[in-house]
Length: 443
Image (cartoon, rainbow, N blue to C red; front, side, top):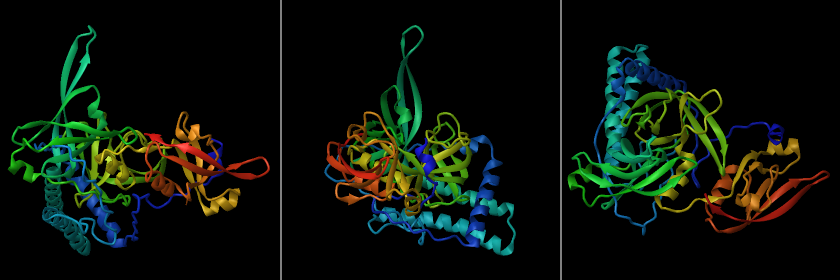
């Protein structure tokens, strides 16, 4: 639109979760070489394998009895200066052991690459060792996943009701002695009539839809562990959340149904990163991989530390990149995941905006803030008389200088809250600062 042409695109640092601070360290030449070699070796080793090598079938399980007394909160991701596999200060003994095992696996790969780079030789045996280490990592991460059996209902041409069953995968993002919460794709919920978690011993337990988000396509399922054998429950672990502050060339692994088949696995690398993807009340980092996308794909991206760094998403790809598998960086949607797990409604303002930086402010003569490129019809912003071209400079008494701050302030509020948004509107002769009373809705 015309307003957007007035601005020069400026990419920014990865937009983190509220109160999160990530300091990137510039990669050394050896680090860049190591990443490239890892990507090349992974592509060579796994690309030569048969298609069946991408499918791993391992039955795990989980369950839940609702617990609403304790809020689920994730600590900030580890700073890049330390290894991403390091645990936060508050972890259990099991998490410490799991983290150590993942560090060891990643260390194996790094040692192989560093050793061979020093000798300037990389052989078949090196590739096999890397393959073995990555397979161990996948096996380890699969302890944080659960098979799902989805029963769907529909009608045929003769208006007769029929049922179909399909397999899916959920990832454990929270676990207690009585319950697990699974992260799954909303795609599996289409026309479903029943949803069960299937354990490795064949036990089936009902999975209940706890919350879902239409923007990200994420769903949270609750499963009771009361009917699960203790030895089975003990094997289940939470999937650690990492940081999406990654770079092109970084090896990653896609799990879930990245190839359109449940329990398929994709070994690939990051090929392109699009920062500041502007969506409703959001600004995301989109991570594109070197893997071709297929119909019905869903799942997650993990790094070589076994941490969740991306949520596969086909809906918001850049033009010309529709055939590549893409993911939303977990750092940007961590607050959404946390809200879903706590079954808290996500507030909705209904704007799409872009940052007005100091440089743009000087060039265009408008204040630093968030320039509105879109105000959605029938949204709270629309009802409050905000318009395209307005620049939001404050929410309540809090100054707003960019989308990161706007998102952070917005998600400190709740649906139904009444707030006053201060915005600057350009007139024919002057800019006017106006205040707009807005009542937030539920997304």
